Image 1 (cartoon, one colour):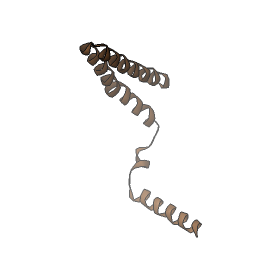
Image 2: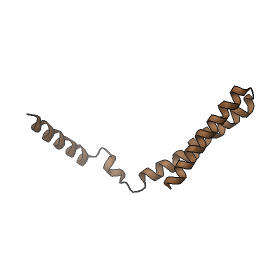
Image 3: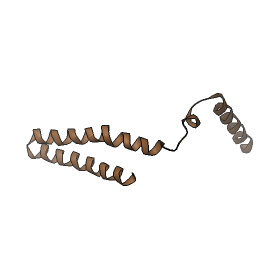
Length: 85
């Protein structure tokens, strides 16, 4: 999965760079197509795969502001303040 993400990222960067090269050369229609395809691949293919890869073994409840997590944060802040004094 990690290698697929890297290959897609390099592909997106290459497409955008090639598109801007064509735009600077005077062929604006081809340049716009390359840049557009690069952005579409980045937003509809690369980003969902990246997000899935980063969150696949995580518990969403650990990142939510529940009463239990708020209590833990307050206890941690209290311990932190006690160490300073």
